[in-house]
Length: 316
Picture 1 (cartoon, rainbow, N blue to C red):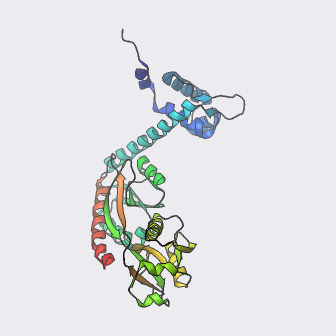
Picture 2 (picture 1 turned 120 degrees about the vertical axis):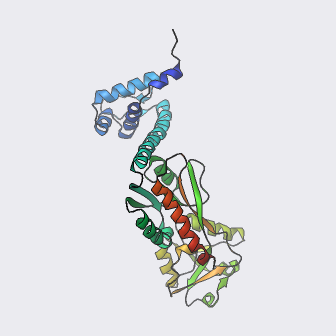
Picture 3 (picture 1 turned 45 degrees about the vertical axis):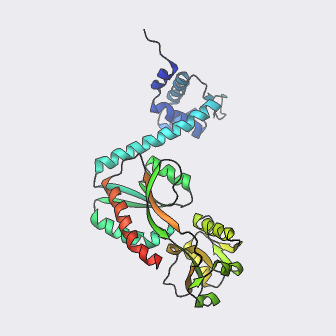
């Protein structure tokens, strides 16, 4: 007769056990967890008890009465793994859906402002013409909220996302699309507006208007500090249009990536920088272990084509 080891007993863990643990932690009581899951309270209690027997640890402190339950240290540790398993389960569902739908279904793409303004219109027009059976859902994301975007790709909430390189450590793969140079934007009436280029030393006396949280601004301001210049920032906004409007109103200058600029705006002038700041590198990313539908692969290929056509204009 073969004895059952503890590792063997872990094979008895079911997805519903982990779902019950997550619901209890989120809801604070067995009753509310049962309502969230559509179970009876006794069923949730039984699932938690079964999970505790399998792992050999107490996972939930039960104070009794109306007081909230809480996870033990072991429960909190297991919950972190349960959340990752739940995310992969959701991703598996999304993969099966993508595989089943083939050339139809939904493609969810994370975008941010400058990509939406300069790259996306041409890309969408071509994709919709080539793949009329695919519903394209655009999801605005904060290009600096890496954990949130990674989580949404892991769970299948996003199939693809535009990204500013480098990619973080973890499950993402991607391909570089375009190199976006930094430029100086000044009011049309500014003394520098008579020039086509500005040196970094010209920024020493300028009041700058920057983004609030954007990594693009962090890269640019760090480059100035590396050159021995401390940026003087008077205003900040995460809306590219607001930044440009403030520059046009004569309230300062902006050190930004070129894709974030409306170059047709006659109220401002766009100057190259010499020496230049290393450009931001824009990529498109996906989960390396998840199935990519034909539509997703086609979207990436079209993104490469559109950006290859746009790159010479940025370089010029």
